[in-house]
Image: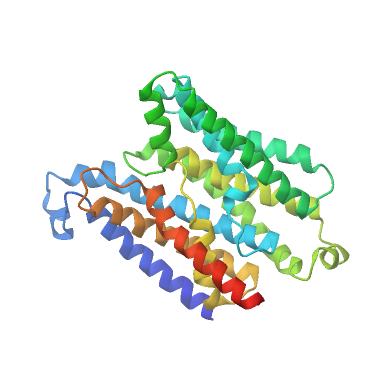
Length: 322
């Protein structure tokens, strides 16, 4: 019952945040002006509405991915970026910018998705048939480190300062200037990814008993691992392809909802998706409404929020273990 109440409250908050998101910006457009044939309506229909929808999709995808990863690894500090999928997708996008392929609108997200897929393939090759969570985690850290190094190399060897600026700006993550084309790209991929991750819910509950106990109860670790990797890769890959690198959402939101629904992994999944959508909506509205000369990048804003949150979480865990 608590979970249902929380989900309904989050849905209501998302609806309100979407209305505010459509009004917010350097130019505020009050709700009463929408029905009066205001000349600013195209700003809402073609600029703010796709951006708002994309914020909901990306936030939900990252929130759900974080909840699944924390349940799968049984680690409250796990984050979707831990698998290296985010770094791989970012590397793919950086390659398209480096060689100038991003001039065609669909090539940059295409390269980002290819980078996420390549990361999936490398993880599968490293882990093999073991299904070990420890090996899987270490493989993700290695892949993420290598992809990050190659991204830094591309920045340092960029042919022109303009390309360097493009790469750095894109890596900061933002929903600026997004269109319905980005929504059409993200929606099916994130939808399939979230559906795959939802299938893992009952198995994640069993996994809380321990890996050995889960195996004895019929859990196939390789199947679970494959579902987690595919689901996270689709969600994170599509998010990075359309919005750049936006961190900490998957780390923060499971901790925000867990006190209301308990520690059972399956109970955390849906609230985390809804809370992720709400957090990103609110953050995007704030960065647009801030009285700055240029818009603060959403990825920077989330890092500014996530860094202190992560520090507080570590301090609380240290006190618990002391």
